[in-house]
Structure formats: C-alpha cells, structure tokens
Length: 489
Image (cartoon, rainbow, N blue to C red):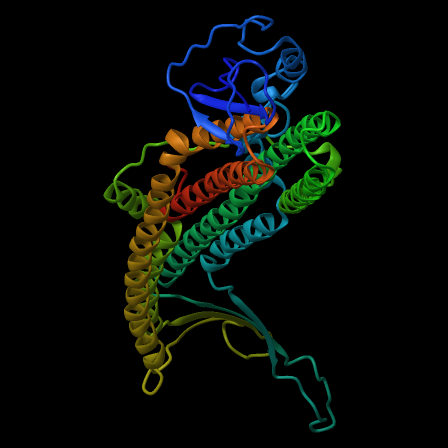
C-alpha cells in the first residue's frame, strides 16, 4: 500500500494512492486504509523519488491535477456564498434609491390614491362657500277681465323683485372648513400609510431580486465547480483509479446542479417581472437589473427605540389621531347646525296706477325657522358617538403599532442569531471540508460517497446562508414598516 503525506494537501491529512507497493512505505496487510491523520510528519525523499516524497511517475500524474488551483480545481473563481453576495451587488443596474424614486413617480396605485388627497383638498373650497342669495321676481295687479267696458290688463301691473339671503350663525362655515381640512389631513396620512405598505412590498421584491441574483451566481459557480470534479474523476477513471460505474454516478449527479441553475434563472426572471410591474416599467426583462448590498448589519437598536420611532412616524397612527380631532369638530358642527339661521329679504315694488303721493315701495323681511321639532338631535348624538368610536380605534391602532414593532424586532433578532455562526464558522468550515475531501478524493484518500456528501453539505450551507440573508433583509423591511420609516437601510 502506498501511504504518503502530500504537502500540497490541507495540513494534517494523509492519503493513499493505491494498494500497490511504491518503495516508500510497504505493508503486508491486505486491507487498504483510506485516510490517516498526520501531525507534523516529515518524510524525506527516497531514491528515485521527487521532493514531495512521491515516486517520480506518480508525481507527474499528480502534478497534472494539482497545479491549477485550490483543491486541484482549475480556474475556480468562487469558493463560497460571500462571492455570490458580491455578484448580487454589481455596479450596474438600479439602486434601491433609484427604484424607490421611480416607484413613487410611476406606480399607478400610488398615483391614483394621490388624486384622492387632491379631491379632499377641493372639498375645502366647497365647505367654506357662503350660501347663495335668492332672487325672486313677482308681478301683481294685472287685470284679467274687462271692467265697465274697459280692459287695460298691464296698466295696473306692479313688478316686485325680491332678494333674500340666509345668514349662517355660530360659525358654521368655519366649522365646515375645519372639518374639511382635517379630512384632507386624514387622506394625506392614509396616502402616506398606503405608500408605506407599498414600499414594503417593493422592498421585499427588491430583496427577492437581489437574492435570486446571488443564488443564480452561486448555482452557476457550483455547476462550474462540479464540472471540474467531473474532469478530475474522468482522469482518475482513465488512469484506472475508479470504476466506470463510479464515474457514471458522478456525471448523473450533474443533473441536479443543472436543475438548480435553471430554476435560479427562472426565479430571477420572475422576480424582475414582478418588480417591473410594481414600477409600471415597460423595460425588457433582459435589459433590467438592480444592484444593492446583499449582506446584513450586525447592529440593532433596542426595541424601545423602535417603538418611540414608530409612535412618532406611523402614518396610520397619525390618521387615527386626526380622525378623533375631526370627530370633535363634526360634533361641534352638528350642534351649530341645530341653531336657527335667519333669512333676510328686500323687496322693491313700483306701481304707477296707485292714486297716492308715491308709486315706489321698498319692503324688508326677516324669516326665522322655528326649531320646535327638528333641532338636529340625531346628528348631535351620532357625532358624539363618533368621538368615542374614533378614540377606541386610535387605541387599537396604538396597540397594533407596539405589536408590529415587537414582532418584527424579534424576527430580525432571531435571524441575526442564526447568521452570526454562519459568518464566523459554518461558511469557512463548509468550504474547508469540501476542498479537503475533494483533494482526498483526487488522490484516492476519500470515497465517492464522501465526495458527494461533502459537496451536498457545501451547497446546503451556502444556500442556507443566502436564504438567511434574504430573510434578514425582508425582516428589516418589516421592521422599517412597523417603525414608519427606513431605520435600517
């Protein structure tokens, strides 16, 4: 059995190249051990051996595989999901600020809701209008039948124009204007709340696109890496180190990597399509791209700070408070509408047929409704109940704010707890195990099952890390949604 420690291998790992004597170390045992642990072992070259302690011929064959890269893999550009994160942050494409500005300018749902604010603003003009005066033109004294043989129908006709005006008391116009202005403020706050929700959806889709880009980059590099493994296995098969069935199993495993790559391409395209729909952008999918940091920040403010930020910035909470203020105004307006509004009138009359010293007359009238039965009692009671209802709704929204912040904060904190060991240990460990087992397999020190398991473990760890990054960024978007503004960029 040929047992050696290769200095090109990861430190502390020994491999065998076959169950045939090589002149370095000879054993009579029939069993061939696959893996030995060496600690600070130095083996000098024997006669006819190279500087690595191997016979010249095996060294030349090994050199053909080892000299091209880490773990014997030629031109390997990426070793972990960290490079996939960098691929998702390429300098081309739209940044989050660009996407956000484009969304606010072009999203049809947001633009349609902005018109509602303008409509409420226009109602302020209507609310503050004065009542129109009333003009009435009457005629009296027209002769409709002959009298004593004389018929002059228009001689005695007396035209009588009349102007009346309703005078509103107790500040009705001012209260209507105040209520309308408060309605505009509520509409503006509700529009801001709609924008907050839509921006969260946009941010989630933006993160999903970045994640899809990172996963696509990872699956592409894993496919390239596996192609290198196939090349190594092909050389080993041609040299008689592995059987045909083992090489076929390795080639068949490539189907999974191809499937992952195609799925990642479809997911990225679908993510871009949804993002373009939110932006109301007709740019072809192939020409559209985004850029941004696909990483996490290992810093988090206290939950109390986020709660204070939410109380100051949540537009739905502000709208609830404004609704309470409008309810008070509407109640005052209902009380004012129960008061009596007089109607003043002026009448002018001219009649030349009157046998008097004057034939022009001016009359003044005042009309006052008697509020005996209808004193607006129902509206007064309704608006009074509206105050209580809006106050209860404000309490409910206030409680919802605290609940949203607490739930989102726990999600971010939990995701950070999972991410820290990945970045500190798991990513490097997965890469190290994969490279070590690959090197061992290349030199006959690991089985095919060990190689496939190591590669699958590496894929699982790297993909889980990218998915956790996406979960973190989505959770921070949820926390920003709960806080009412972007606290975590």
